[in-house]
Amino acid sequence: MQKILKKAASLVLASTMVIGLTACGAGGSKGEDGVITLDVYSQLANYSGKQTGWIADILKEKFNVELNIIPDGNGTYETRMEDGDLGDIVVWGNDSDKYPTAVKNGLLFDWNEDDILSDYGPYIKDNMGAALKKNQELTSTITNGEKDTLYGFGHSVATSSEDHESFFYTWDVRWDLYKKLGYPKVKNMEDFKQLMKDMVKLCPQDDSGNRTYAASLWPDWDDAMVMYVKSTATAYYGYDEMGIGLYDPATGEYHDALEENGPYLTMLKWYNDLYQDGLLDPDSMTQNYDKMIEKVQNGGTMFSIFNYSGSLGYNKTAHLEDGKYMYCLRPEEASPIVYGMNPQGGDRIWSIGANTEYPDKCMEVINYLSTPEGRITTDMGPKGLCWDYDENKNTYLTDLGKQCKKNKKTKMPSPYKGTFQDGTLQITNTTWSVDASNPESNGETYNSDNWKNTLKEKQYDIQKDWSDKTGCAGINDYMEQGKYTVAPGTSYSKSEKSEQLKTTWAQVTTEIKNKSWKAMYAKSDAEYEKRVKEMIDKCKEYGYEDCVKWSQNEANRRKQLEDEVRASSKK
Image 1: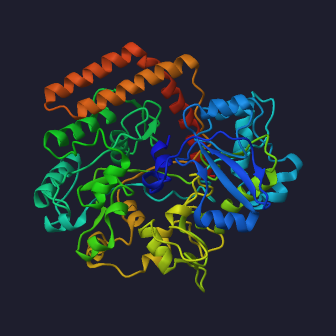
Image 2: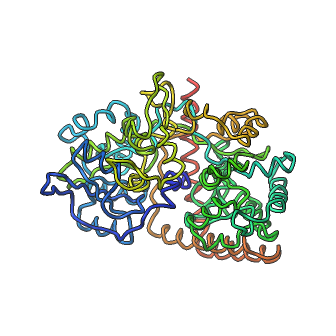
Image 3: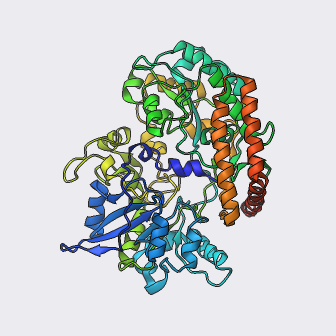
């Protein structure tokens, strides 16, 4: 239900990781120097080979292990399943696709066997009870009640269900241009489109003299629908991606993708209007994320629905010193979604392969990544070098840490080798939610953007202008002043699709994506309507209604679980 969050959990990694050849080796091994190599099969990784850099040094020093990352390339899962050896540490992209098959075939290690969890995963055992229980209940569901074996836990675990995560759909715009235009009122999407026209007119060229656009998109992350179109509906209406459509957490109402005048097609037409007005980057359909973010960093775009493809890419020191700034400006009628904290965790599961020779070492590594130190280190670098606690237990970034956050290619000092980017953990999964409470701090979370020491740092004049105009200290403060929709965290996991539905689903979603892009690039309203009709007719021919029926059933299941969470919170 949060596919784009899953993609962006590795937001900078997505544009910097090295994609290698898929490896399918045997289990872990011990070298002549006594160092143990653990095979990490991660369906989320975009990197193949030995983990390098500062995180490799930390893991070697603490546990005498090295990690061999194995991404999920074509045929990797099938080959490893056939061999009966998934690896030592196994990380799943979700808990509803391939994970159940591994459970049914006994290819995962029981975390209670030989007291592995108690002896080598004490922090997990003492602090992630709800997430562990969820996994056992999932096992029971998969096996029709035959067993409730503990095989792991899901990603982004929260410490409390009372709060929500940081806002992710941030409506970033060029604030300096907004200021020059006199801070015009932006009530709805029509006003927002007019603002884009005015901004491009005011700033027709980027830093290198290239033409600017309102937005630049990319197709890499499209799933059942065009990601950016769907995400704009999520950012405006507060409806979450759900199967082959969008789900309203506030009411439980479900909107299929091809619903007439529904949220998906409404936003598709909005982007087509941008294209017809010359405001949409014509490379959007063919470029990848890396090409898109280069344009953002170079000042080629006026807005982004997401912070990672907007402010986080644009707000480099040179721009801020020139009085240029990209930050939040939400249309007044928008009600962006924000996800409730979930102590049960998400669906990207950390697990251990059944045939590993070193379950203790696997558990030690996962346990370390689940400690407060390990969680922050994964994001920010080595403790003491890149970050630490002050005398009041408030977390802070060192000068090196700040530099590494701004520029992932910052060279690391001795004894570490290479750049900060080289040492980024290539497993690409999280343990605690970045907005979960850090018990070792003075009431802070793992999110460095919200640390007290970060917020009190000196602002540039253009940043101060945003704060003065909005009366807010940061994104969360600003977003909570207007409308927003909270999606409660639940134990929801997608149901398995039948083989026939999987085939139909692939045909339908491919048609939706391909025809959506063609409709977006239509040069007239008549051509747009023609493309949309072709899409609808072809999807119905493939079996669209079967896909909608499955999605509606999933929405009903989710609604029931959300109602239970809301009822529980009122007790």
